[in-house]
Image (cartoon, rainbow, N blue to C red; front, side, top):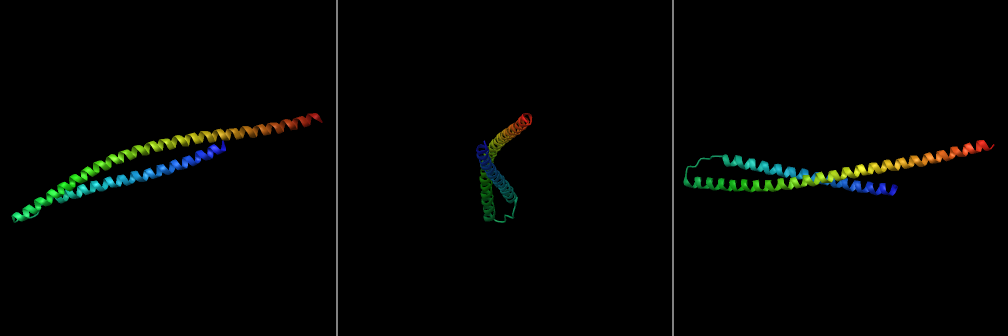
Length: 141
């Protein structure tokens, strides 16, 4: 039983490490999503700028600039959507791992309680045996 508890403890440590790693991945992915949102916001502010367009060349340059900004915004939106999907998958994986870790923790606690009860039973048997030996010696004299 003691070997089982040691093995289960090692398994629990591995699962805890896995959960911590997954938490790190989820946090990284959240930060990535936030960076995409910030990029979209910044590019949107740039595209709102209206500069002086004195000549046709200025207007053409400004139009090409805005076209490129809109393409970048669209690209960042697609990247954000992909990152959010990945974040959702990571969060689901994390939730499953946390549930598994909790179930193992409860199982280990139950086994540990069972082990402790067995130790108490064995100690009680020893005490009862010693008490009965003392009683037999006391009645035999």
